[in-house]
Image (tube, one colour):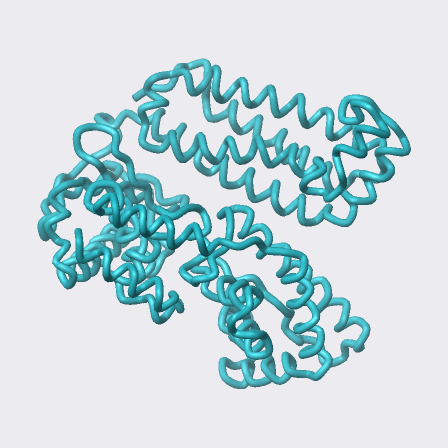
Length: 457
């Protein structure tokens, strides 16, 4: 599958540099006039890239039919929406209607008074905007490069494909004929099959192994430069689950990814319509928003515990447990200990508790709620400043996760479940079938409901 020669990886690398240039501008804006200039040039650049990607690159039918295109297109669209959004009224928190009343067409015309006000809103959210745009750029271009590299590689010339019937599952393994790091690739394949074997054992425990005959599993070990999750696609006559590159993931994480993607197949092809609607009703009725009141309760609680010295005691215990040399290597443990302690001082039935619990159980990333107390000579003022910075970052990180995945659930499953009811089903499927739901604190009422409807598959 060859790309049209007019579009290459180099073209996208040039665009990525431009995107990063605008990201740096977010940090360098010094006043309302500069804000307006960057905002307007960002819109022009956004339209240019949108036209390039969707009108030039994506019009190629080979591109559109590639299994990575849907995911890549979604990430690009998120970037195209997100970049100008950080300059807008909704993100910055001012009233667009009244601003336009006082300054007609202000978004096209520079008014010093208007943009001095807007700059004030922007300056308070500058770091959050920078982090958001930076993440969107990384996610979009990581996928773009995977797609472009895959399209520019002739499978017949450069890759081997091995078809294997593994415990009833039809598996296709792609790998380079002459890989640069053969040992690493072979280890990644062994890890994949170990995770798949565990997944199949878990399916058998629920008498769901028969579903393995209704889809293919494709594992790509050709490029191990980037670790991503899986993808389920229904293109072609047989639905497929794609798993690219799992070199840095634990066996448990690989198993979770496989079961999650199988969950999509179960949800789409085997779950009865009435059960599907009942599940959607359960999930949709449990969404809630991450409000300023929740943030303020977290802030107040954390400051109270910091002033009492609770987090310092936790840090001392943590260092004693793991050793001074390992305190940065095992920092996820410290982060979780601090969040768990904070949760003890919040009403267990409150939405604030649900937010902290979701942050603690987020599989991919646990935000740090307070920093490590590393400097014994540090003054209280300096220590308070570091706590303030880290707490703000924690609140922004949770906000970013909530924005990224949509909404949050009162009934705990995972952050990713906030995307929609189907993803909530797949996360529950992976946790319950994989027997990790207690470890990740999935709500019992969700588990019971799931167990009831999965019997009907």
